[in-house]
Length: 447
Image (tube, rainbow, N blue to C red; front, side, top):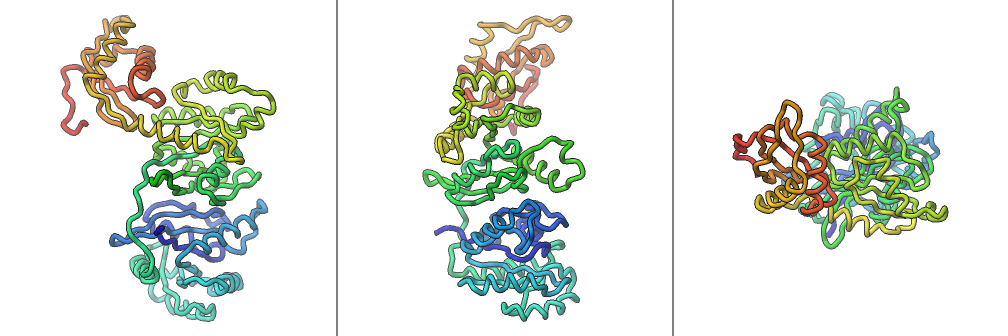
């Protein structure tokens, strides 16, 4: 049995995103005074006393989206309601019952679904009597809360679980791998997510910047649970100036790279690699993240007689820092090579979690240094590697014990890493090298 879903529904600016963040105890949805910031379904797994449910934030019902995406937003709201075991009908105790609240009530009354009426922004107890007028919506006495101050959070949780008594609230499967899908605007990230999910999980539109939040989408393969993180399209920093929503979207996309196990770096086969692409690639390298360069819309490139070999050469030239990253050519809109891409991500995940023995590593190091010894640097002397050991995974991190950590220059380190990829099971992932004087000892916490 799948985990129960609880959807938060209401008109714009009643605090739906704030409630999701308060219940999850972390910032997930973007919270901004601008009406209509949330468009897609944003979700988080909520646990309380070893019981679990998926809480889903939705867009404001009745908002007129300035990018003409109102129909898409309302479709996401309806999908959330259809899948929900319980709907939290959120209202604003300070503003009282407005015509749009009545519209939400009419939508919910037509559905055979449990509804819990919750009055938000009741920061203090003396405000609770103001919720009396919401009786006319037809869903009984509202529960007064303050998402901003987490007032009555535990009370709300208990009320939610009382409505979920007939559903399975056991702990869900732990995710095996998190994949962050990153890239510029309109490269097909959301289309790819929907193919993985097998449904219209996120809005797909020709409008640039449709996705604003970073959206975790759970999917299963071979009886394992995975997370795919859809992120907002990254744009030039100067184009974000003065726009808080774009800035929040950017910071969440960058954070998604940091928390991912594998990064799927999307490029549009019909467009040239830009400065934004290069900056994203550099950030992925700086974070030592396994990466697959995903060339989407390959069907368009093939119509122009493009070849994979030519594109491989172009990528190597434009993104030299990601020379270790495999390339996958897909057409997301048609679902072509989607499964191969996920399989490849699993292979990279296996590589970053592989541990080699100290004997195996030192044998490789000795063979490489015999092939090409480190060069003598002026006034520093002859570099010498005494021995090495792997100290951690994700990424594979190798500690080299040397006579002087300053003697091994960057060029030789790059050569060493590239050759280690050839002879160790880390052929397509970043390797981190650490240097230590050979007389120093590793701390007891090293593994």
